[in-house]
Image (cartoon, rainbow, N blue to C red):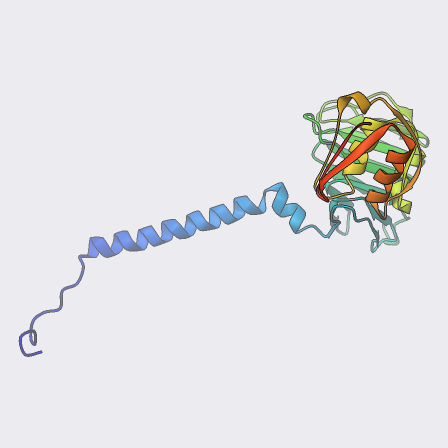
Length: 260
């Protein structure tokens, strides 16, 4: 263009360019910080776990050292094996563990890590379950051998075969008899022995998608039996025939249980 030829090209002032660069760097740093915070959330850790199960699924895993894991429904674990230690981090749910002797030349200690504290097995089979209470409690049941429980800010204690206890960051409850039938989920079964119907339905809800609600007046009804977990609707059908209850289904994902 002959009218603009020879005119100097206008450039933004240096300080304006500098502000744009600093703004871009600030946005980049904010994005990286946000990504790091997201990666530290429990949801991200569970999604990226080494081993996990969906709602209603169980899974058996053989670890490199020969230890056998069975993950219960909606569970997740991470492995942290090094030359000096073997750590299993329970991120969510429940796991049944049968420990094996470490094949390494120098045996490495095995431990289960939770936010409430650690569990160190001593040649054993045991289960660990993270509970959904305000204290972030963990339930441990020992079926063979023994374990040592070490709360984050409490005194360590030992559980022997046939015992169970709960612990949080501060303390461990006194030992009670273990319930081997509570680990029947590892065989695809849900076992009830004169159990409150409310407790049974709470447990059953862990294995099915959606909402399972029940009326307070039926919560104290006793339940006994062995129920296959392959189809939780079959379990509800069996309960409806054995007890004075009525099961109502708005959809497959919204089920209510009330008195008949």
